[in-house]
Amino acid sequence: MAAYWLYGIIAVLIAAIFLAERKYPEVISNLEENILALLLAAITLVSFVQVVLRYGFNSGFGGALQLTRILFAWMILIGMSYGVKMGSHLGVDAFVRMLPKRGLRLAALFGAACTALYAIILLNADWLSIFGANGKGGAMTYWSKMFQLQLGLEDLKYPTFMVDQFGWPERVQRWVAYLILPISLALLAFRSIEAFVQIFKGERDLMIAGHEAEDLVAENKDALKEAN
Image 1 (tube, rainbow, N blue to C red):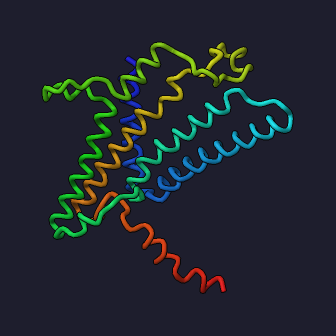
Image 2: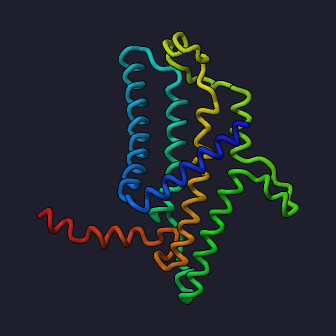
Image 3: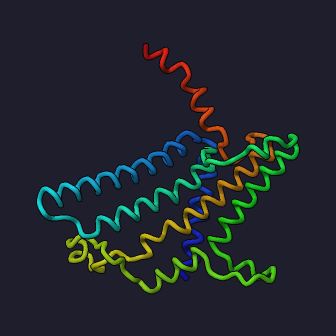
């Protein structure tokens, strides 16, 4: 049952992003960048505070390491779809660039389609049984099991006042940390499909950035002159 309402939430989220980007593209881009920046800042802050507590006061936060790992995983998983959107994933395009224009376009479309299919299979592979494949499980199934079992994380705990005031369990549930798995994979599928459409319309060449070094040099070639 939990999986059904999560599917609904994800569908509403993607629909909202899609509609908002049509009217306010910069706002959505800034929002995604700010989320990634906040996650990175939180990792840095937690690590800094932990070092100060450990070496300055011989104390520390027991769940700090696990919290930074979860935040780092969230940042990577959210960054997957953002990287597809911005075309910032690194890749080797030496071969496909040698193809004629039509061949390059077909290769780019194939790559975008494979990425979308990859994300959808990882999200939920049960639908593969339609084609006779023995595919089961996926991020949605795994998250649903964690939600039903209500297992807690090993080290990360809720603040004491939350446990006392609201009757929350002592340890943070695993489903809270793992919620990013189905959400991020759905976003990756959405961005890959979006990239497929953009490539089909001729609005972009590839999903990857194959010449990022050259692009950076070109963008900053006059920076030293301006500084002087």
